[in-house]
Image (cartoon, rainbow, N blue to C red; front, top):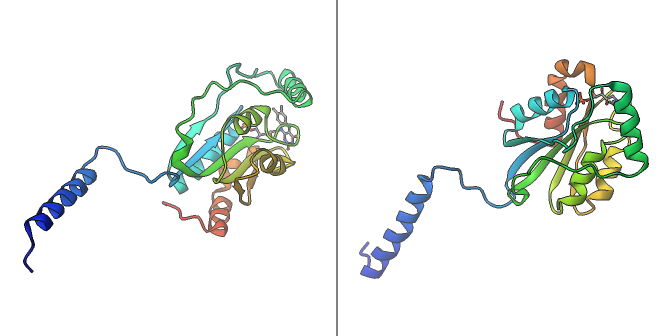
Length: 193
Ligand SMILES: Cc1cc2nc3c(=O)[nH]c(=O)nc-3n(C[C@H](O)[C@H](O)[C@H](O)COP(=O)(O)O)c2cc1C
């Protein structure tokens, strides 16, 4: 096939651009194509579960921190958390989030505090736009499972698609690998391991 000079020029420019893209030092992602595992954890149980999920689904993982760190004293913490819930508080977040526009799927993790998410999660969902994203909740708890949290997420993010969540007893997180696999499989989520 004979190519005109114009065609040769066109293919050279396009081919060069494609080659250049494949050598970029960072991956190029279409907007909304990435997965984010975003979580808050006070005593580490939800952090463990988040890591298990991240190991399986890949993507990025970000831990949410508040400006005022929560006390390690359990009684003081439960009283403070109760008060924050009763006053509908929005604790300030210290974590700077990556550009959420890059993510289509967000695994959202938290401990169950007084029947729902800690109020820091309310700050997050109030302040960032999750419209059009798929949110997949997961939580650790002492017996109340996901509680009211999924309803609260749906209220705060009416334009997000919220999939079936996963919950695990906080003190049994280490043994839930197979349950996490089954949950992800049930959701039709591809895993990397
Ligand atoms: C302030 C506070 C409130 C809690 N409220 C509940 C609750 O309502 N229902 C429940 O099952 N567990 C409750 N728990 C237990 C935690 O959900 C559980 O220990 C969880 O695994 C902690 O996660 P983390 O280690 O990621 O912080 C509460 C714990 C705290 C500190």
